[in-house]
Amino acid sequence: MKTYIYADTFYMPDATKGPGYLEINDGVFGQFSTEKPSDGSIIDYSRKQIAPGLVDTHIHGFKGHDVMDNDVAGLNVIAEGILQGGVTSFLPTTLTASTEQLNDVCQTIGDHADQIKGAKIQGIFLEGPFFNEVYKGAQNPKYMGDPSVEKLAKWQELAKGKVKKIAIAPEREGTLTFIDYAKSHDIYTAIAHTDATYDQCKAAVDHGANIFVHTFNGMKGLHHREPGVVGAAISLKEAFSELICDGHHVHPVSAGIVMDAHGRDKTMFVTDCMRGGGIGDGESSLGEFDVIIKDGAARLKHNGSLAGSVLELIEAVQNVVEWGIATPEEAIQMASLVPAQSVGIDHLCGQIKAGYAADFIVLDQHLKLEKTYLDGEVAYTK
Image 1 (cartoon, rainbow, N blue to C red):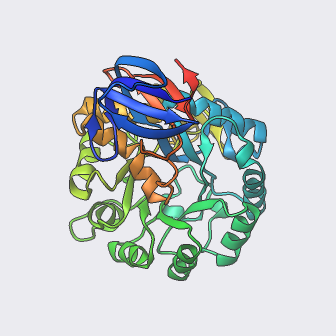
Image 2: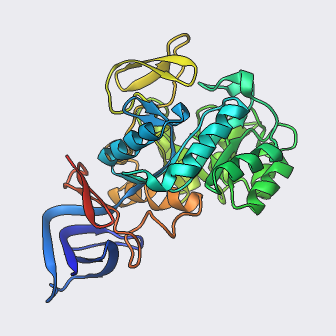
């Protein structure tokens, strides 16, 4: 039996529409119409807004669990927990670690991804270990080294083809050959934790690297005589730029500069959330490092550096609208369709479109989340 969602506003990929009726049939989106249907049941969300389920392509953990724990039960907690932030699809994200530990994590996700309840695992993001120690951030430098095609091939084999994205520092030896290999195997290469020059970044992008990870953070900044990584992230239009819009990682003005210079169609929000997300202030950990969470920021205990975030993705949407640097339509796309496009999963998620799984969120007029739907069924209610 068909069901129709009635609401005042629908954020569609091509335009904002409504009021109207969105058809859902067997967990899949059907057509949108402004005319009241003559068949099926109607769920009335008058004075509400309907947006696509959000897509987080860079998230390490939530509610006390981390992807690197290599624990299926923990993955379930993360996947179910992030529904409260409007996320319906995500890439569980690893940290720089030993080859053996990454082997184990890739195999666990590969074996169990399809059994996880909650937000859908659409692939794996390997954040490292091929980084530069100069911009290590909260990553452990003792595991950093030059890119290895052999290691990537092994991780992909163990993950049963689920590795979608891997981040590297393009100044390391052998990166262009590595990027060529990754691209030929449908793995998207990102640039992160890097002291690269603009020219090194451009060479990487010319070979197929297409994402700048948490722009401004963990990278060489912009200088008028050496544009650096930030200059590349802003100016190389064919690539995507991540932003962590929690108000701690990037000043709102700086976030707005990226959107204005680079384009909102290539700027995307990620959380980079660690295990302390959804818990509140207190002590936590990221990888092998102790972390203190206070006032909405996660910092390394020993030196105060930011250690991921405790951001929920719907909060990024709310923040940029409140800061006045994006419209609601732009903000929602930067948290749904754009990240999905960055790793080639926009045929699966990130938009309200006929034939897609009916993964969507219900928002009030202030973009506060009220419900999250998966496959046409309520999966989270505030």
